[in-house]
Length: 154
Length: 154
DNA sequence: ATTGAAAGAACCCCGAC
DNA sequence: GTCGGGGTTCTTTCAAT
Image 1 (tube, rainbow over the protein chains, first blue to last red):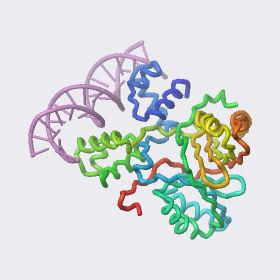
Image 2 (image 1 turned 180 degrees about the horizontal axis):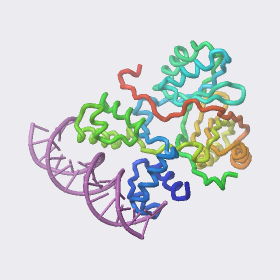
Image 3 (image 1 turned 60 degrees about the horizontal axis):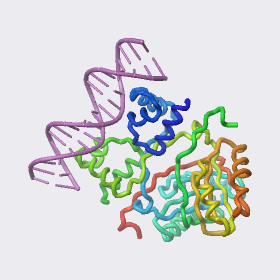
Image 4 (image 1 turned 30 degrees about the vertical axis):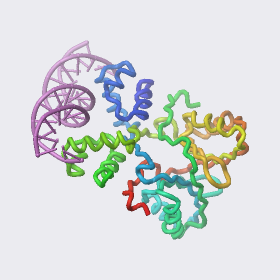
């Protein structure tokens, strides 16, 4: 995992369909080498997945909401499993602080959100209380992380 | 945007490098047709991006944190712009409720988090107060949304 | 829109450095 | 690790339906 690998990762985060020829040109290697780098990054698990990112509106998931959930220990695992299985749940984090979980949702609209909370979340035995925050404006939403060289991680 | 398109989108969300031949086999069309469908989905903006998803550990962004931010109106736009420009900030949402913004961060460790809050967030004029929630365990984290047919969106 | 076929581009295996 | 060549696979174009 050197600078060349990091550059390749950066490009592929932004342009997942960049060809080996494009990568090769960007990092100053031959097509074969660039190809080999990508193959290795995938094999090592550095690149864990390839995906198409959909437009939220077009997909019918225009509404983004975050829900803080307070849970009892009793039934917590089942509740978490139930939630992660749901396609509306994009993220579920066990968090530090006053609440147990933070859940990110994508739904068509507020009506669907209301139904989801009522029909899916509230019936879970462990769930004590929820606090919902609706995203009024998503100013940034990316999965691209900066890749740090190990030595620069103080 | 029919059922075939939706199925293609679903596959491409999970396997962004699926070939036209694979898609064709999955939806029961010819290679050319599958290819044409994908081309149209991209042209229409339904597929907004292709990307490689990196392993967080390998990228040196093992720590995930969410920060609730209270802001004054004065200087809010500048603060938001400053934050979205940062690579550590994966998401920034203007939210309803008691707080102004919810920010998702990915950083190497808690030391980096402390530094980011101290050096980047606190100095912003509009920022009044922050409340940080650290993800102890990310149980689910995906960008894949379910694609709903317009008629099923009640 | 969908198709098959042909042309073009990309990927991948391999032997050499 | 890197490279170039050659076979294979994939994408893209096109005329026809």
